Length: 425
Image 1 (tube, one colour):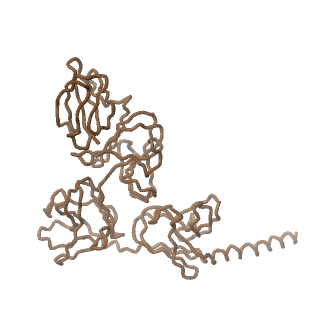
Image 2 (cartoon, helix red, strand yellow):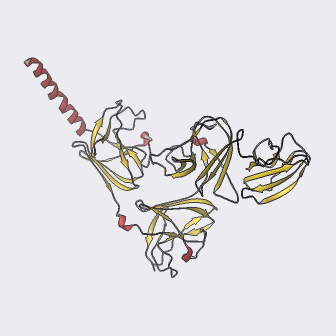
Image 3 (cartoon, one colour):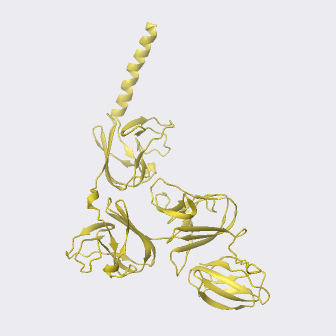
């Protein structure tokens, strides 16, 4: 028995120093994750600054997760420092290939200092920000906004933590952000950083500086000011669709773009063949997936919410039946509609026949199949009639219509036909 104990003791003596030695002699360390500016692209993982056994990252982090690989190997089969599941301030060395995957979580976007001591395995995450600097209210004013330069009617942004958000129609012009609706203009405001339009600074009321943001193109915009980052996002919303239920799968670089209604810029539509699977709506075709999207409300499939790029949430719609679908997205009211053409309640039941179109997506000509001679009426999405006429060959010229969503009604003096939706590209 003494020999057995001696062997075990010897093994302990050998193993422990190796683990301790490895932890204190890391040549380099990196940070990667959805919370970081590079997302989960490990080949671009951010290298930490080293001072002895202490490694430091200083920079912006968003809502999401991260961990510390020891190199930029793209196969992920490498050693990493991960979070002790019972203690956020303590790391452990994950051995490459093992199934454990414990990450740190950032719950509030901001500028951070993150340090890890590989000798003691102590981790510190500090938000470099004073929450008392965030104003109680924030407004937007300018000729680009709905109420122009009438500061007493400036639109108010919604506050969420250290972030202010507004969604609405902007037109070509300028804007800035006062902190109240004082009509004398002698108040503090937040204005555009002259050297970086994605940043803002605090203008002191009465000072001569007056740097404003510029809008070049009218559209429905998402505006978001993050005071922890001193950063602003304002971008015209475009809707794309991606997912296993679509014809392009998860190839986000080829995500399907929706048509935007010319008169109601918050309405988007597409007519697509879908199969059983999942889908969601990105607002661009960035290939790293760290972008804003519209995702499914977890409590109501007819509603959606605005997902901030990099956050961990990933709620998708599920399609159960294959077929052609009318897909309508309302970013003003956060509503979504999927209408299966084969089973739809999209037709107006009072009419005796359905209209069959060669295509519901048209450029210049709308072609009605199975009927040649008819009278027609054309309406916009709000129900206003735009044009009427007759056809003797089943073709209706629509090159005079703006890009958008329309309804077609017709009769052939024998039957009245159900209204059908089409999209002018």
